[in-house]
Image (cartoon, rainbow, N blue to C red; front, side, top):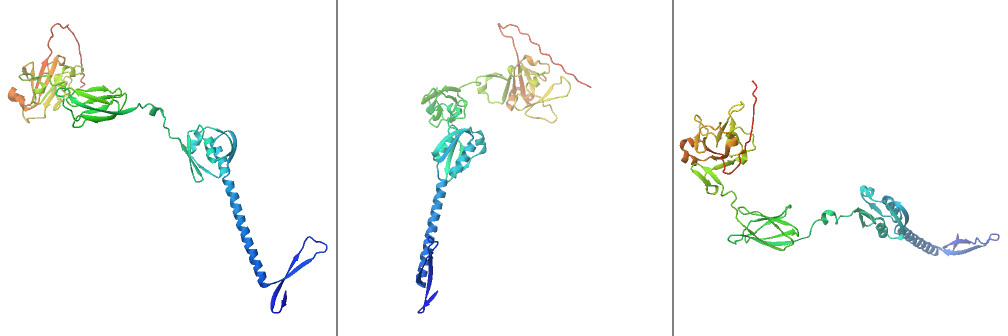
Length: 381
């Protein structure tokens, strides 16, 4: 360092390494300000060098994670194929292990393929699909849209129509219209009209209280007008009452009827057992545990504490106090009169109800038929 006239100067030596034997020394004198400016320039150069170095490094890194897929394999699992694609691209894979286990093997021949092309080649013929979110590949099972169940559903269309009474041609409201063997159905409106989405080969079940039951095939029709006829099934049946016979639709009293068809297959020993569980409001209990003991009949409960609670029996028009002697196989019908109107016919004896029994009678021009029913019981002391 050399001082000259109050100023400080710095001696900087430059060595030229190319001359080994006779090395020459080059020097220059610089002021402090010039040295400071030089250091500033050197700092800027170093900063620029560092910036460009980082940019080049990031470009190399980005290039390494966005490169295409080059892969040639034969009969490898999807898990192994995804692992190799992940190593080349940096993508992560998210998938259920069960789906990977059920998937088949793949053979790949890829060169500079994009991630989309690589995934399509891997999933060709597989029941899998994928979605790419950022750097993650999400794989899932394909949604089945052509299953045999769906293919078996026949084409359907909108069916409209109306339901009217066959006698007076008035519309019927509230008629139930249902597709057979399904839960699809509707009801008619106040004008008797309806609309329903039905298959082309559907069969409609039409029902309404007091009217006949109908089944109508659609056969691809768009409009079906239906007529229903009132039914009188059961209303014209004759019922034996105290003063003869009467149609069931004209009865106002509480009467229940049992026919021979209801009891012919029951192992009963008496008429009392024949009506057990068959008539509402009638209770039949055993009088004792002895074999062959008759039942005790109460109609609509017990009417007297001290008096008799047994009903009045009428067999072919003759009053009876007991019917234990009557063979159940000889019974044609049993009518049970349960309300107070029976007392108007039979008087006070009918206060506990009346059981009217009509026995079988021979029919003209019918062959003789013989049947045998035998029952026995054992009582231990």
